[in-house]
Structure formats: C-alpha cells, structure tokens
Image (cartoon, rainbow, N blue to C red):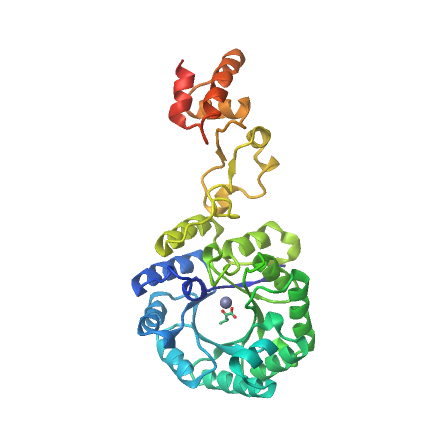
Length: 380
Ligand code: KIV
Ligand code: ZN
C-alpha cells in the first residue's frame, strides 16, 4: 500500500502574487471549481486581509466548492487571523494558514525579533487561529535557511498550540534536494509531538530545484506538497503541481500516491495560462506544447515503431490526445510516411524516396513543414 500525499494548490494565492497574474473573484471561482474536479485536497484561496477583493474571493470560493479544504493565508497577526476566520465562515472545511519567518536572516533583518519572540508569536498565532477553525497550518517562512534545531523548537510550539500541519517553506529556493530532505527527516525524528501534525513542503524554484526538493521532502516523511499549476509563483515560481503528481505516478517505487485526476492536467494548465495571461514554455515538463512532440528522425522512427521508446508517459494520461510527429529538416522517411498516412496517402518505397528528396528542399527553408506543404509534395 502506498502513502497518500495531500496536494495543496496555491495557484490562487502564491501563483496570483505574480505581476500580471491578478484575477478577479469570478475568474478565481472558475479555477477553484476546476481544481476541485482535478482532485486537489486543499485550495489556498487567498490572503483575506490583503484586500477587500481577496477577502471576497475566499468567501465565494468557500461557497463554491465542497470537497477540497479551503485555506486562507495570514501573517501571525491578530487582525489577519480574524479576517481569515471571518472569510472562511462558509467553508465546508476551512483551514487558516498562519506563520512568520524563522531564519536568522529574517529574524534580524526583517522582523527584528529575537528567536524567543518568534516562538511566542508562533504559539499566539496558532492558538488564535484555533478559535476559528480546527485545522490550522503553521508556516515557518524561510525554513530552508533556518537552523534545524531552532526550527524544531518552533514546530514544537506550533504543535503545542494545536497546529495540524507544519509547512516548511524553502521560501528562497536555496536548498539542495538532499539538504531539504534531511531537514524534513530531522523534524520527523526530533520534534516532540510530530505524530499530531502533517509535515508540508513549500518549495520555490530559484535554482530550478523546487520539484526535486518537494519530492525529497515527501520521500523523507512530508505528506503534503504545496504547488501551483504550471509552477507559477513568486520570482522563478513554485513547485509545479503537474510535475510532482506525475513523478509519484511514474515512480511507484517511491511508495507515494495522490488523488489527482491526471487526464485533467493539460486542460487546467491551459485554463490557468489563459486566465493569468502567463504562457507556458513549450518545453515545460508534462504540459508544454512540445512535451509529447518528436522532431528528430531517430526519435520519430523510434516513437512510430513503439511509443515507449521515447515517451515515459502516455499522453492520454495527462489529457493530451496523441504524440506529435513534427516535420522538420531533421525528420526522416519514417516520419514523412507516417504524416502522409494521416493525410490518406501511402506512397511506395520508391515514391517515398522521391518525395523525401523534395521534402528536404522545402524543410531546409522552413522551421516546420505543415500539412498543406506536405500535401503539395504528395500530389506532385
Ligand atoms: O514562500 C513562502 O514562504 C510562502 C509562505 C507565506 C507560506 O509563500
Ligand atoms: Zn511561497
């Protein structure tokens, strides 16, 4: 039996913080409903104290979805927590996500608080949030750069006040996978009362390691991963939901699974990209336009003979109809014959040799040869 990893989607909070990605409540509701269909366990709907619009979004999303937990972000500040409690009052399952920074850097240069003051604030914030909801998640901002021994003390204080989830963000995307995994392992082994809470990963992608760090976190005992559709988020982004979900699916040896309906990954990626006007890079894993496109002759020949030669994921499993054989000057005869067949033509070997020589002349002048151009060659 594999262990379930809860998927906490923060597209509508950390993702929406990105300049240009701002959504209005109606758009957020459309995405929240699609996230519910996708099967996410927790939707972080917004930061209610930050603006009346975000408060309204949390209220309306709470009314609009029924299966996922709806989560609202706060600082470890009384008025933030009160606003979150109020915004969540229609949620079937509501969670307050409160916390503050714990690293020495942030304690000294941002909060200007002592280590003990941070612990006191942790206890206060969690206890105050508990007045509104049973389910309280505590985040230790910049946990990635926080000393493990001190982080363990903060986590203990949060658990004592009733935290149900402990979020260990690598806020600045600083950690290497083995460092982040070791941090989660350390907390699992050294925090008194850790059995009462779920450890959560929340990784940023400044070094391109957000996905790897999240997976190492889960391998070392985290049972919730915080992520966004298409990996959008502050600076270089957050962990991409589609990536961590497909890694757990494709690597059963990890002994981890999620409840995500993977055939919906492609359509939700497009929805979020369009609504947030944030294009997905073509070579993006799982959801990029080229994720299942083959353009070199060697690969095309291999895929046509047996798809698994070059694809570890069946495109249908992530909602893509079929693999694409793209015709370029690097394509071989097998690819030309394959695409000709799709257009209803089956040239003999000799005919194909002639067509192929003409095809190369055209292909050398183009990025890609399209169906119309291929048809012209087939008809001459
Ligand atoms: O990256 C971060 O530390 C955050 C917290 C607010 C959870 O987004
Ligand atoms: Zn974040």
